[in-house]
Length: 250
Image (cartoon, rainbow, N blue to C red; front, side):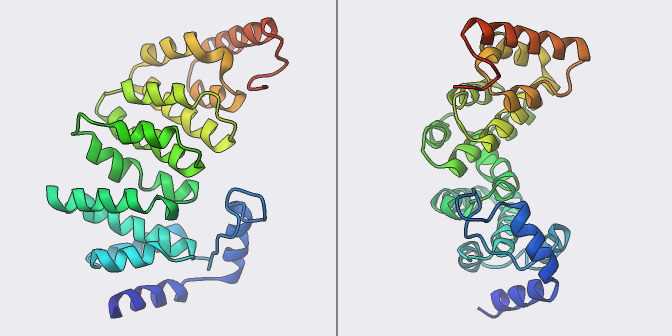
């Protein structure tokens, strides 16, 4: 356990109370907010990456203990280590890390933790698999972070030019009420459009009128001005027709 204790001590040496306070505000840790009860010690992400690189050979059981820590920076550092070990591991190691990841989604419980790991571990593993049902189960769960994991994991497929799962999961999440899901779905739709704008536009033609405002704006962020205006006007017309006063109103 010496390595794990050394890692924690090295992180603590880089911690500052001021950054911890700022992080608690940034990641919405007040009661009732999405990050409620999360704990920060105040370490910059680049410093966490350096520590993760230094301890990149930390045994998986110890990485698991780090991932279970109530301290946010511990969990993010653990995920950085898992991503590294996944990328360098053989098929057996990759499967072990994928299984470990799925068993510990309760500890991948903020948007930065999800975004730093879902595509690189779960998505990368499933990119070579035909059976991707687990993503649909996650997308249909009641848990905010499992739903974000589901859509962000498909980033690995997008990189390979595979869009079907991204679009299908985006459709499942169209009516989700949380802003962090709106942003994640819009972001992944934009990533699809970066590679095949026609594929994204087919989705938008069908669903833009029921997309929340944030989701739609994220999705069309890189469109030419004329195309942005077209989709916003098209959506607004359909929203008015359905008696809606703004995108995403219920």
